[in-house]
View (cartoon, rainbow, N blue to C red):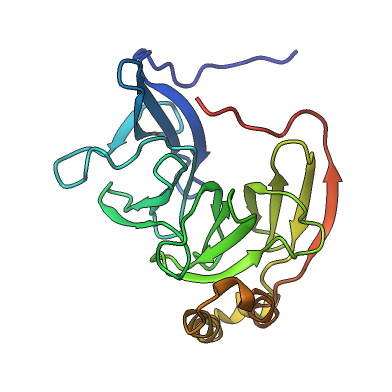
Length: 252
């Protein structure tokens, strides 16, 4: 017989839980929440941390050292290897990153050239602490370093099999591949071997830096995507999986 256990019961009904992440290193739960003011039609977000028994530990933002308008709507959430908390906030059009203590480190608003924009959806990190984020507008998955510097496009519209907007992301620590769920009516998942074994084993950041420098010298970032992906060991999706149900997300 299947049973359900309530781990956390949030009594403040003005705050709505939207996304959750379980931290592999500590077992902590990160819960992204938002609150909507119906009079002004504005939203405010926060992240709450609980231990693996459901005991409250932390709120971000939590003090005067962190802006209280840090989040508008935490849509997706994850944690990096260095303890940073990463939030994909599509209302703010940014990936908002704080330290594990809740201090704001940076907000990523899109690749070069500056002002190109971002509508972030799914987010995850890999074994080398790279940040992967899917962009609703450009149909891309972008790779950043742990400090928010754009490195490369992992997937673009031109990638075979990626014929619709990438949305949900999950990194497979066993195969070093990324699982990509496409949005809305496409109803597919793709598996992409986006870094090769050599880069993982050697931690060859110099090669990645070289690619980044090539990217920054170009006025048209995406025109270099194919060349950069070849140097980074990026390949096309390994397989596509049809799944049932509707893949869309309804904005609150």
